[in-house]
Image (tube, rainbow, N blue to C red; front, side, top):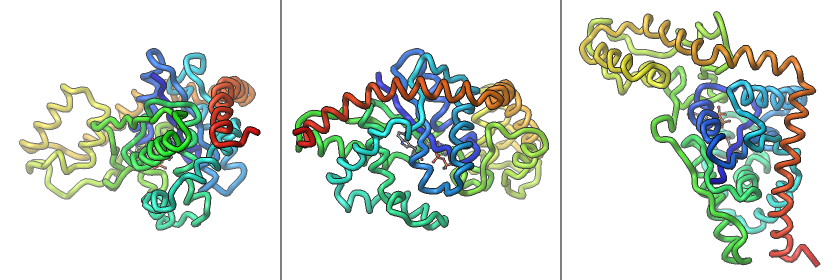
Length: 321
Ligand code: ADP
Ligand code: TRP
């Protein structure tokens, strides 16, 4: 199966990104044809500082590699290194009904959060559709927040195929319901733009401060609590073993769950889970030339596929004369 997903290099990656997308992608490495890329063109809609974007791209590459992505077992590249995606975006834009794009909630959400209302931000879903269709991806693992964008990609693939003849694979979203939305410190969706994250690569005191800041209610320790309403419980569930979660569940329902202790336990679990990756990331960032070489190889592999699809598209629509 051809599996593809991308991530924006627009900030520190957090455990929502990890469980919503990265972990799933890495798990597919052995069994599937995997495409993983860093969407710097998308990030340009919100990152205006040159160095922040450029360094963020290298850092996102180091994140993936440190977490176990093997570039020899997949195609791993930076979006803007394959310029064909921009041409396909234009072709799809001419087919994309205004109403379809206007209905996408992420534009309004991002503007409400203070991101400048640019045309690029508005047409973001069309670029994302081009990302997916250019590589003829069959499945796209994403968090629930991207579901609507996947629907746009599907609609545009179907529309193009109907108007010009079978050209694109119609992609399926792959959303893992158990981790579809990882809550943040405040219980809202964990997101870079809400400032409520637990970053994967944060360490020491800084990380402790974040974990201790997970919002919990004021129920006394001995009183019974509803685990399904507790933010800390939901995050804990992502890291603790099934057996330990059963015990913790018992403490919530029967009384005795002390939030402070549970937070310290979570901190330990975080360090265990990501300790090795943190070391590896530091090593990788120490050798940016090697990171660039890995991404260069990925670009060549990705471009080979992209050229085939774009050539067919040009022919189908009449851009070949
Ligand atoms: P952010 O909201 O922090 O800016 P992105 O939009 O860059 O994150 O998301 C990158 C990937 O991580 C996407 O596949 C997205 O669906 C997933 N993701 C982001 N936040 C979460 C979350 N809180 N829970 C589950 N998946 C998430
Ligand atoms: N829009 C996605 C996000 O913010 C990132 C993305 C861009 C993407 N292109 C993609 C995800 C193609 C999957 C497939 O998370």
